[in-house]
Length: 461
Length: 160
Image: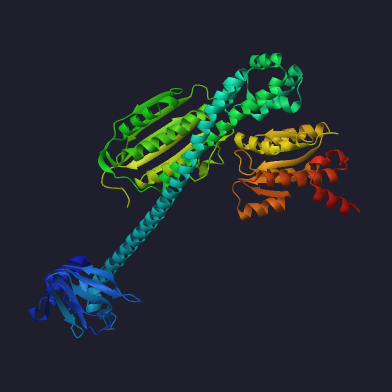
């Protein structure tokens, strides 16, 4: 009796041993199952409560519309048939199959309860174990649901990416062919026109070359400011004066032409415009090539990732590749060594180049005094943290919350610089490393912070 | 004869110049003003207004870095001084919703998609400046060489 009291006064889990000994130790009430053997069938009569003594059993549930779904998996000292036994429905809710050679013991519906010193009924004695069993099963179903959802999302994303990849590859091929024709032919026109000009209008050759090489560098505002001055100096119409101002041809060159023959100024506009137009064509072709490349990158399947990737090395490589725009800024690298991650160098370099290039372009177009780019690396317990900071004009606060969305773009010098997908690609890549990217900005201080977890394979499917 | 202005607004210089080239044939009758932003266009409109000169038409790009074309034209439409200025929106991003907003709120007279056909653009511009000239009360006779004849005929019929 003391032994029983000791059992009942202790917490419930220690009671399991007592239950096993009391109810499940009759060798007459034991079943040995071979792998694949069915213990009970869904919907059929079952008046027994089973306890697994060894092996593994799986419970399945019929799905509406055919097929079956995994409901639970039980092994040593877990119960099967609890819901039907205690609900008194005695109808099995699942089909239970042995996964390997298993032994189960059971009690039947007419089992008389044995007093445990506190509780008199089977319901009271088994209650905590039934609740635990149900919680167990519920957790498992929840987990299965989450995994399925994750797999489905990954599948949808990879399908979307695959079709975007295929479409963009098709577009790229067609468009690149068309653009190649445009580019090659305008090159041809440029060189031949330059030659004809050299032979027939040698004093206009410079203005053509200027239009072709420098493009439209004078803004409409600047040109308007100069218009009256040119009108007065050369006695031309306002319209013509504006067009002359737009060319940006230096005053001494204008004067030389006007002195030779006032008609030369009109010629100048024409030849300069010819050059600038060809420049427009070339720049627009390059833009088209860039757009195609960006779409292709966005749709590209992920490249292979290997362990042992040193992110500091990737940062160094990005800096090397950006040597020319970086020459104009002070580069401040505060690099702490980082633990290796599972990664692809090309992807990581692309992320850093994109952010650094953005920073350089912003500072250049705003003529930021003492432009400085600061790159810092630190490692915390679980993440590597890279910050890229510039002292440029910053991001418009209205734009900042949407900065990673596609097609958010800024333009400089009357020309589109990109497709507005750079940061979208960066975010997507960082996200695929299980990491995050955050942008904070105020005039004179813009910081992009990338966090990537290290250790284990965190790369998503 | 005074030369009313046609404002071309686009933040991309190459596009701006292309539009100007397509409207070049109007230059003996209208001043073609190039603007690289909505703000610059407002400055010019204010200037014209202060000098008592006419603005006949605004050919405006849709997506621009600072202020987008539709917002600019909506704002402009609220100013009684510029209500009669004809408005043409040139857009590379034509969504149904934008078109509805533009036409309803900004009182836009024409909506043309990029890439545009030069003949089509010029034709539409001629229709709009013809309407402007005939409704502004100035003598339309000197402008006849560049006006759209059908529109002139319609406008004259409407008068009677």
